[in-house]
Image (cartoon, rainbow, N blue to C red; front, top):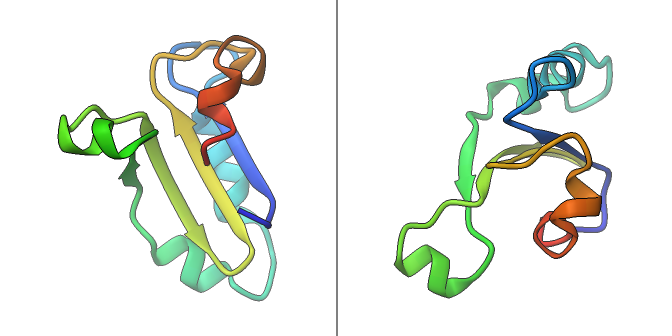
Length: 88
């Protein structure tokens, strides 16, 4: 995507996605209403994963902002799961 994306982990308690999701929902911007109305939707890293229903995480997007959670990731999503984190 050519817009800002906030990626987060689903495994950590101290640096998990809940705080990151909260600030994206509170962010004051022109598409706030549309963004907040979007549900978290599953995303898949490849067509093969989609066919196998192997979900890579969930995301919410509207306007020029996306929030994505990478399943089974830790604090350093882009370091440990770099190729997967760059899929979204």
